[in-house]
Picture 1 (tube, rainbow, N blue to C red):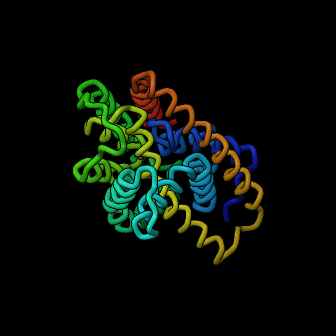
Picture 2 (picture 1 turned 90 degrees about the horizontal axis):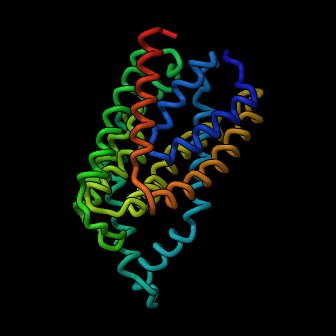
Length: 284
C-alpha cells in the first residue's frame, strides 16, 4: 500500500496545479514531469481530487458574481423582473451549457482509461511522449490563433452557436494529456474572433461545470470510503494551495491578456515539450 505524499510535496504540487490549470501551459504536463524529475511517488487519485477541488474553489471564488449575474439575468423573465442585461445572461448560460456537452459526453467514455493513466503517470514514458507532443502542437495552434485568427475582438454577449460548439469541442480535446483545457479553449475562442481576455474569461466560466463534475466524482468516493490513513493533511494542503494560487493565476491571466499576446505561453509550452522529450529520450 502506497504511503501518503508528504505535506511539503502536497503544497508544491498544489501550487503547480493552481498555476498550470489556468495558464495555457498544461497542468498534466507539469504534474507528469515534476514528480518524475524529483523522484516523488505517484500522488494518487485521492490527492488528484484535492487539486481539482482547490481549483474549482478558485473559480467559484473569482467568478461568483458572474455566475449570480448570469443566473439572475437568465431567470428574469420567469420572475417577472427586468435585469440590466437579460440577453447577456441567457446568451452566456446557453453558451456554457452547449459548450459543455462535448466534454460531458466524451469524459465518461474515457474516464476508465484516464484513471489508469493518472495512476501510472510518473512511470509511463509513452504518456510523457504524448504530453510532449500535445504541448508542442497546441502551442503552435495557440500561436496561430492569436496571430491569424479573426480580429473582430467580439465580447461574450456577441457569441453564437458556432462559437459555443467550436470552443466546446476544443474543451473535449483537452481530455488528451498535455493539451491544456485553457490552452485549447482560448485558442478556439481566438479563432472565433473573441478578444484575448474575453476568450480566457469564457474558458474559465466554461471550465467551472467540468471541474465541478470531476471534483464531485472524486469527493463522492472520498465521502463514501473516507480518506486513507495519513492523507488528511496532504489533502487539505493540496486544496488550500491550489485554491489560493489558482485564484491569483486567474486574476493574473485576465489582466495580462488585456495588454499582451499569448506568445510567452507558446514559447513556454515548446520549451517544456523539449524538456519532456529529453527526459523520455534519456529515460531519466
